Amino acid sequence: ILNVEQSPQSLHVQEGDSTNFTCSFPSSNFYALHWYRWETAKSPEALFVMTLNGDEKKKGRISATLNTKEGYSYLYIKGSQPEDSATYLCASPPGYNQGGKLIFGQGTELSVKP
Amino acid sequence: GAVVSQHPSWVICKSGTSVKIECRSLDFQATTMFWYRQFPKQSLMLMATSNEGSKATYEQGVEKDKFLINHASLTLSTLTVTSAHPEDSSFYICSARKAGYSTDTQYFGPGTRLTVL
Image (cartoon, rainbow over all chains, first blue to last red; front, side, top):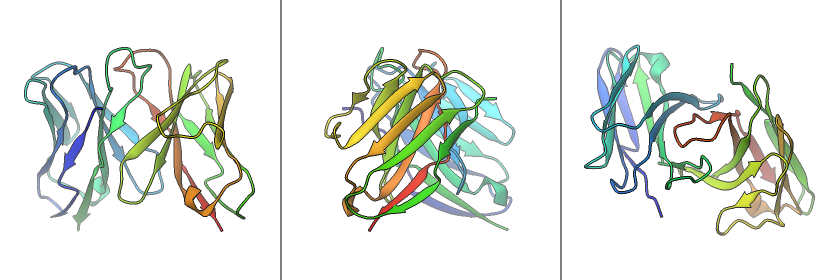
């Protein structure tokens, strides 16, 4: 059974701080790693899909890196703003040809204080 | 594009009644839809995978007779919680994807909060 873990569970930062958090997954049978941002009372929003070891993706002030050999991905937020407050989820398919299924981590809840 | 709606956003019902939750892809055709359940402080737990025109595939431990899933069209899947009991109270959320690869993004609805009295 695929186990996707995220740390920390929650994070409180001041506006302007840069921050990062981790998603860990089994390095064997890796196919893809998805990051989502989930703001309260809204739908989870896709941020990145990553597949290649060493890959780095960026969207504005948010970036993510991927290490498939050691089984982790980092999500970075540069100069956090209050609007970045959300729960950040990572997810990975449980195997090859699993019909698009994703196994989610528990999420990191980020709170950015003005 | 890629908007998914979910209805209702919240529902309160009496124990023993059935509740239907709808998940619609508004601007794309969804070959597959997924239903998740989230308990407080826990991750999204996949309940079932719904493919248009075929029977849903349920995850281990999910009662198919309790959680009926119908995917009658490429834009609509429904989850019916039958004979709901207080332990079924939870947050249910659906997602949809356009095509068939593990790298495909899932587009989520906003979720439904079910409270069973």
